[in-house]
Image (tube, rainbow, N blue to C red):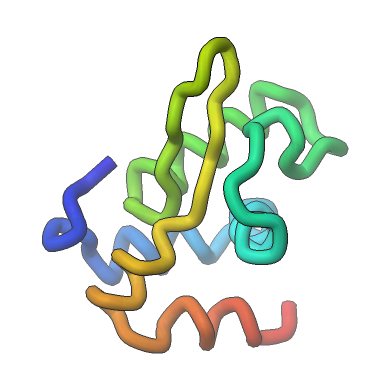
Length: 95
């Protein structure tokens, strides 16, 4: 997970360009921190894991370990500070 000042617009936009990753981000925005297995439950665990890794690597999400669970949250504060209005624009756009 990159530090806030290392977030790049290209990496964030690339991560958000995939419809399934955008769905994950929308779920996190609506629900807040969530166990990774509860996100986009209709897809295989390996597919979900791949997309969560991509979002984390781009700096869009953070993962916190709590016992045996992995909890995922949106890095809204970091994204808003680095790219003001970007996340709001992406989340409000129609698919």
